[in-house]
Figure 1 (cartoon, rainbow, N blue to C red):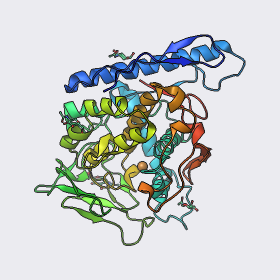
Figure 2 (cartoon, protein in one colour):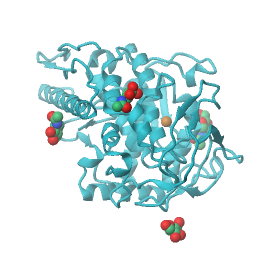
Figure 3 (tube, protein in one colour):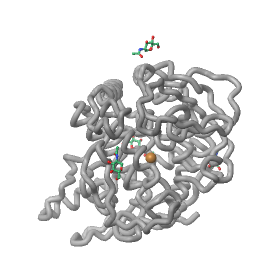
Figure 4 (cartoon, rainbow, N blue to C red):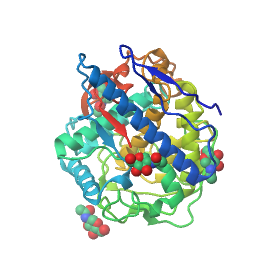
Length: 406
Ligand SMILES: *[C@@H]1O[C@H](CO)[C@@H](O)[C@H](O)[C@H]1NC(C)=O
Ligand SMILES: *[C@@H]1O[C@H](CO)[C@@H](O)[C@H](O)[C@H]1NC(C)=O
Ligand SMILES: *[C@@H]1O[C@H](CO)[C@@H](O)[C@H](O)[C@H]1NC(C)=O
Ligand SMILES: *[C@@H]1O[C@H](CO)[C@@H](O)[C@H](O)[C@H]1NC(C)=O
Ligand SMILES: [Cu+2]
């Protein structure tokens, strides 16, 4: 582990130099200690960026689009008030009740604005995962979703996130996000006994990864989304026993069914605990190493895979259709937060220039494709927004964005 020394951010025309957040010397193995250190580091990142914005604003002239008064603060689910949680849930349901913009000739199964986002994710899956644009694409996508909740459904707050290290300690079923109360993102699926292990990777021709089955497996029985209809997929749904399911009528067919979950705290603890999250932030020294660690060095599925597979179910364990579980966006809020903290440890090389991206344009470079560059465009199809260059998406307080995490 490298002890990150005090790094200075030289603001181009400003004489003030600000101290970047200081990373702890070593990653504690104790879950509570690791969680506390992660919070300290997150808070330092928050303070640091606020100070940076303050300097830019005082300097004036350039008229920064992102000012402190416009800055949105994305919070962990527990930090939302009851009213705020309910407002978020209401807005998600509102998106699920508005008509789709995706032409039904292209995606007959897209029935709502919520489904527009799923259709886009399905359509682009093989060019947005294990690629050079994975982080920037999902940052833009999550932001467009947040904006749709705000602009189209009157949501007052900003996108909340799921702090994996906390649910690893509490047990997912007991956490405010997944306890099934009316201020949760709904709880577990109905318990299905005697489920064999999950065996991942086989359908993709990769070495098998064995994961324990969870405490649910069936339709979600509690909370705001127990009646939700999942309309698209499955496209590549991992099921216990190494089975993989897809809709024979194709990825865009209408296939209404219940939302299933298989909450698996054991997977949360194995791959997305607070120590693993801190290591993911502190150890990788370049973007290739960072995005690989986050997405997994098999058989470690990383914090990204850890969150997805701990949630489980249908479409939670479907690589293509996973945004069909509304908790997806809390998970990807946290993914984006981890990237945001990592970036701010060395913003000069991690939020701009060629060193900020690595990888190619296809899933594990299969089929072989060009290297991703910061001049490349990403888009969210019919869901929302216009194509953006990756270089516009590398900072959360420049370009189209103006948000931080607390
Ligand atoms: C992080 O910031 C929040 C909000 O200001 C505060 O409540 C919390 O105590 C801080 N945590 C640490 C470890 O500094
Ligand atoms: C909602 O769920 C209840 C049972 O939990 C069921 O009786 C009802 O039919 C469902 N409604 C819809 C619209 O799916
Ligand atoms: C935390 O995650 C890391 C990385 O996956 C793993 O090696 C470690 O065993 C986990 N810790 C606990 C307490 O499960
Ligand atoms: C899927 O991607 C192709 C190629 O970019 C595009 O032409 C098509 O409109 C997309 N379909 C959807 C549903 O987004
Ligand atoms: Cu994705």
